[in-house]
Length: 100
Image (cartoon, rainbow, N blue to C red; front, top):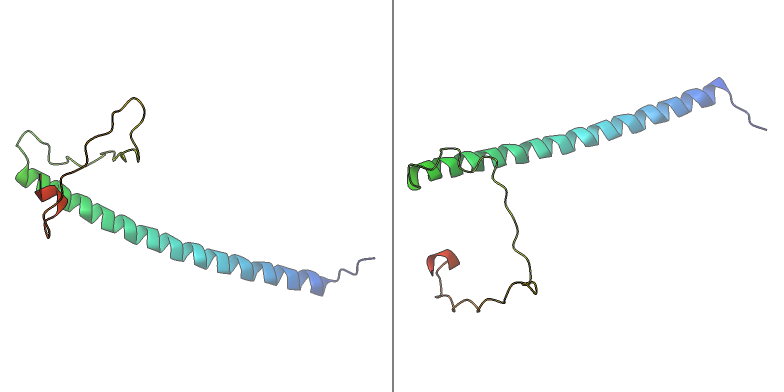
């Protein structure tokens, strides 16, 4: 049969408290990382909004990028979409967006 003594119960409780503290510390560390990433994204958003306000037509609101949804392009054209012609060869040293 089982031999459960108060000392065994106390030892198990202490082990569980230690595991809980380790998990809380890990969670706190991950939360701090996510908070730092969020700060970076918000800074990027502020810079993008400032750039848009300065360089895009006046009809563009200052919060142009706020709430924007970025959609990824499909990897391959579907049967309903014809395949596009390949891009012309880029000039060396020039970014793709500058060659068009």
